[in-house]
Amino acid sequence: MKKIVAVIGSSGAIGNAISNRLLEDDSVETIYKFSRSQKSEGNQKEKNFFIDIEDENSIKKSTENIPEDIKFDMIFVATGILHNDDDIFPEKSIKDINADKLKRVLSINTIGPTLVGKYFIPYLNNKNKSIFAFLSARVGSISENKLGGWYSYRSSKTALNQIIKNFSIEIKRTNPNAIFVGLQPGTVSSFLSKPFEKNVKSENLFTPDFSASKLLEVINNLESKDTGKLIAWNGEEIQP
Image (cartoon, rainbow, N blue to C red):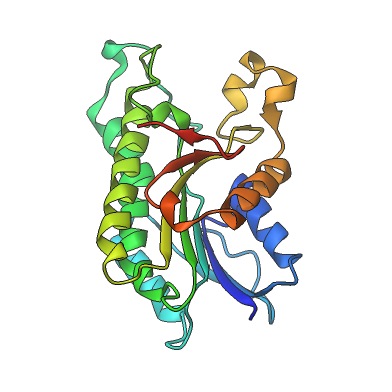
């Protein structure tokens, strides 16, 4: 049976690459794409809808576009912020911490994906294996933190990883076929990584399409025992 999938944040670099890969996949019947920018009305295979993950009502309302009989085999949350063109940038030291900026990063990287889980989990397929994947980050690992800094981003991803773990425990009771994972995409050439690319070796800087292909490989190989984990683009489990 062909799969039905949803991509939240489909206009971003990785979300768009994931969507394009899925559009080319003959095993996928329909892709429901949710983003702040609706590029088109879509077609028979591709459905485009608006969502603002900083607005709970918008997240809730976006699910009204999902037919009652639809169950997703995969939901991929590709949203996130590290910096912007205005005033948000990773903190280098304690003196750079700012309450408003910290709240904004947590809102986008933690609270938004958590609320997506709240409203989209009921649409997961509960008859066969289903995947709920969230883009996370290696720097969210407390045990691997040797450099410090990046207070907002690190904390937001650490918190997201805990949320994913919680989802995996609670939903296991009602939908044992569901797998919840955080995925680390590697360093991807995009707006998010642009200011830091000069510090990355060329062989470690991925195109969005390459990262998407590796993340989908990881997803296709997931088993029930993997639920609640943070997994890198190469299949390596990242410890909390």
